[in-house]
Amino acid sequence: MTVSFEEYAALARQLSAQHRAGEQHAAAESARRRDLHAAVDYLQQRLAAQGQRLDQLGRAIGVDQPPAAPAPAPGPETPGETAAWPGPPSGAGAPTAPTAPSSGPPFAAGAPTAPSSGDGEPAGAAGAPGRTGVGAYPQLPAGEARLALPTAVSPAGGGVPVQRAAAADPAVELELARRMADEADRHGQQAELLAQRPALLPTWSPLARAVAVYAGCGAAAGVLVLMLVLASGVGLVDGFTLGAWICAGLPAVAFFGGYLVLGRWGRPAMVAGTPPRYLPLGFLICFLVVPMAYCAYLLMVRGLR
Image 1 (cartoon, helix red, strand yellow):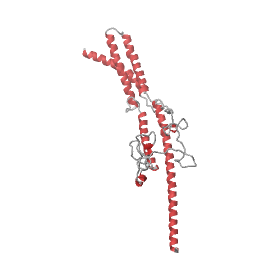
Image 2 (cartoon, rainbow, N blue to C red):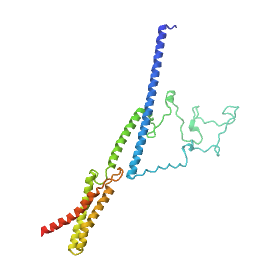
Image 3 (cartoon, rainbow, N blue to C red):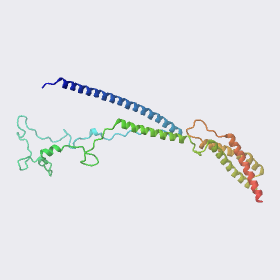
Image 4 (cartoon, helix red, strand yellow):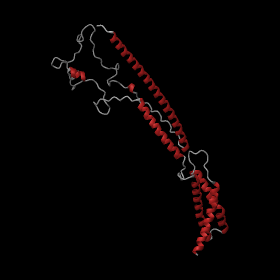
């Protein structure tokens, strides 16, 4: 069979096209692998940065890292040490069957033979000594014997073949990992925003929070002023003590109480340094609210009279 020049040229062009297609496929696969490696490196850097940020957040809110879980203690036996057959070990008093001489047939020299089932065929497992009540092995046709191959069985249900796990696409897995990293970044930003808010009146501005705290402490001191006035009316407190507590004692207690409250519950966890506590404003509020409460009490008593 002779090959013409046109057929040889067509075959050469086909081989050249296949070679170029193979080279293009190899180049595309190499570029894909480089992109996958770059994406893996980028995700690894993002995860490392997220881990450092989470450590900072944990230290800021006073949460220590959990201790590493201890390794499980080895059991009394390993899978490699399990016996393959529950019978007696070899060489430890196990009964051995008599062997025939090498020069004769296996049934010669008094070698025991399996009893027959009556049809001229060996009885199989039923005729083995010590195996009473066990039937002979079923004889399958040639076609069925070829199909009766051992199959993998799932641990959930007997006789159900296990489905092979589909090969995961690296690009799909990296995209899922990237989405999870984006979700982790979003939750981390929300945690940082929450950590930048104090526990006391988190939605208020620092100035409004300070005014509310100092005013509240001054109001509590005003209630104590009214109690001292009532005690003075029944003769338990003299006038000098009442004036000292109204002019200096209770305003100072209210001022330092507001100062401590702002330092304890008005400080965000993630703010560097000390937040402003507006000391002049707090001093003015506390030393005005308490005397004003006393003046309001006097005006109310005179109005009732």
